[in-house]
Image 1 (tube, helix red, strand yellow):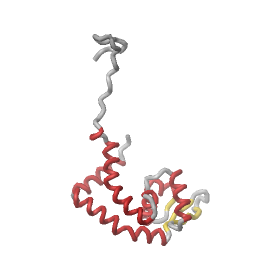
Image 2 (spheres, one colour):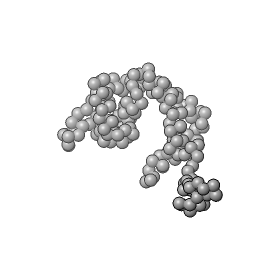
Image 3 (cartoon, helix red, strand yellow):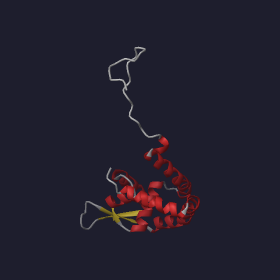
Image 4 (spheres, helix red, strand yellow):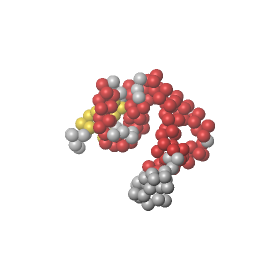
Length: 160
């Protein structure tokens, strides 16, 4: 490696050594994005029929599965920024998919619940969503899928 501020034999200034970086094919962020698109592509196609986007789908799924909850917990579980969730909730409430009521313990906060209309939308599309997952699992393998989900859950808990 040539020391900085020196020239090579041709008189060109030496370039600082570039840090070695992983190839994009082995980059964790890029690999996760590719995997996400493999999974979410068919889900997005399914959601076109329902008129909701994937963020709204996640909100409805979390509320349907876990019941009423505070917005901060919902944002965390639906993998959304709280500021984004607030905007999404206003729209979903206007669409009749959920309701927000003041938290009796802290009136500054609200508890979010799915409505019957929201629950119906979820349950109408759950068989199709499950079929998408089953096709993916058949192609990838049940054991590998379970192992991948375990590894991703473990990675989620790692402090970077």
